[in-house]
Image (cartoon, chains in turn blue, cyan):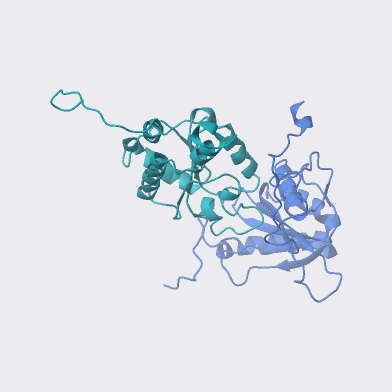
Length: 193
Length: 170
């Protein structure tokens, strides 16, 4: 047996199980969103990968709402970001960050990945009205990448010390950029009220 | 007293008697932050039984303990907390740095991890391993007891240096 052969998930191989469903759903989405869907990457190599939709920022909330309410992708399994600095060399003005949103369909256990490309300094509208669980995930993205979320009720650092400068998971943050504090993190007086 | 009931005596220093008492009644405070903490629990449990060496009463309050066992990785955000706990312990106090992460940062040479807890608190005994086996920790405990008996730990040296009675200056 080839050890590189992907092991099936507990729901089997995604590709053979959900391939037809994905093609149908993404076809429908492409019809209704048109140009707003920048790119679709279907999983060709790995039978346990899931498709990726690149959606424009302006239409992202509409798409996510539709996926949640009409397509049963109601579970936000993961919400994170990646720093793509220097990856896209085709254009000088390529967006720096990818917001990565993983959704799961609780009816048939299919999964899908949505990506939103953001320039540096560009803010994204919060997803809390759609998924309340996005709250801490957005705080973590803000902490690690410095992406701002409009409409977030409490956008503070969640992991790093509140006195920390910079955002550690950015590619230009030094790997050993230690910042030493001699006292424990001060308590936010607002939280005691 | 000798075995036959005759009165016997030996001479020693008062300091040595105190150190004899100290080394046989260590009260450890477990500062377990990751997987080394599991080995620490195993060492305290019945299989290895740290109680055999006089360190059986685990206290979860720094005010009641004199041996701080740092088992696991200490992040930069955790470092001031560790220092606070060390400062709250009553003198004399000892520190065992258990495992590669606590001793040197281990494989985590990144922005968020202290490169060894000796940058934060004075350490008496280091235990290598990832994680160390319970035998390793027991060995470290015995080495620490030897050093306490000799008065050769950080806390005791500082005590001597600060006490005019023992030849130090305040």
